[in-house]
Length: 153
Image (cartoon, rainbow, N blue to C red; front, side, top):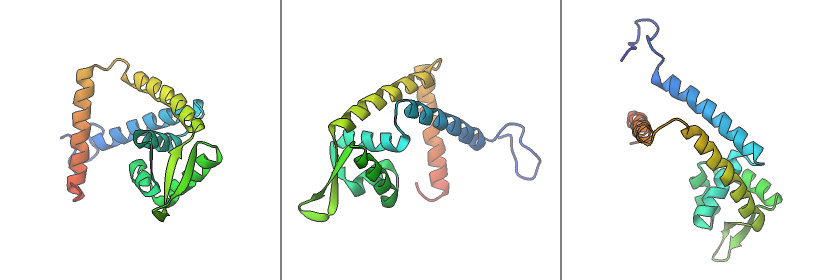
C-alpha cells in the first residue's frame, strides 16, 4: 500500500477516492442518458423492479429499489400521475398496495431499456470480457471489505 497514516500525502490516489470519483462521473452520465430518453433513475429502478416481478407489494418494491417507503411513495405518486403504474389495495390485506405497470409504463420501460443498453455498450467500449470479470471480482471484494469492517458481512 502506498499510503500510511501520519506520513504525509499518499504517493497514489486512495482507491476509495478514485472509486468515488468514477462512480460520480458514471452516475451523472447514466442520469443524463436516462433524461435524454425521458426518464430518471428512480423511474427506471421502479420499472425494472416491476418488470422483473410483474407486480409487487409496495414494501417489497421499496426494498428492491433500495429506498425508504416514503421516498418510494413519492416516486409512485409521480409515476401514477403520469399513467405509468396503477396501485390497488390487496383485498386480503387492505394496508398492502399492489403496484403494476400500465401499457404506458411498459412503453416507458422499453424506451428506457434501449437507453440503458446503449449506455452499457458505451461503458464497455474498449474493455475486454476478462477485464470486466476481473473488475467485477475486485468490486465485490471491495464491497465485502467494507461490509466486514462495518460488521455487515
